[in-house]
Length: 177
Picture 1 (cartoon, rainbow, N blue to C red):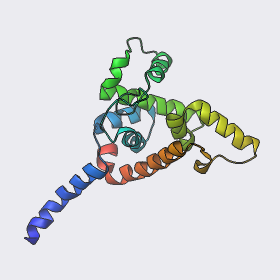
Picture 2: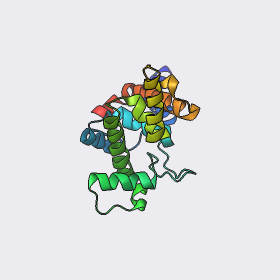
Picture 3: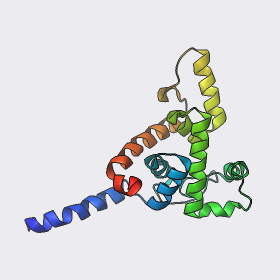
Picture 4: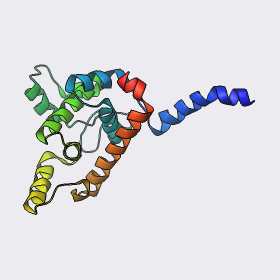
């Protein structure tokens, strides 16, 4: 019996990982992260925080694994030079992850590489983050996660940052291999 338990431990560990921290689309994530100079674990963590890899439309109208709003996707399509984009394209995981990764890269560039600000903008909107950042600067302080006034956005940022560490640890071979 002990030998049977030892032989099934890797399968059990994989099953627990799949339930508690799922990963799908690893090849797409790796490719998009490489193309956009992103940490693949960050892309996976955003997908996890948005949909836990179970794509669905949100009540607000966001679509796919990375929950891209159609108007955001249209902006990104124009910005990236895409000529054939339609909103229904966001239902294709590979396209959705490409747009979501492009958006993450855009936000990281907009906020000087600050992951906290980029994630807050991904969830709470750029105009809100710009306002919060301006208020912190006007008060002469550095903006931190605790300065995010929206509890949902603050929790989102912390959830993504934690998940990013877990994806690095649990899925290194799939995301970096």
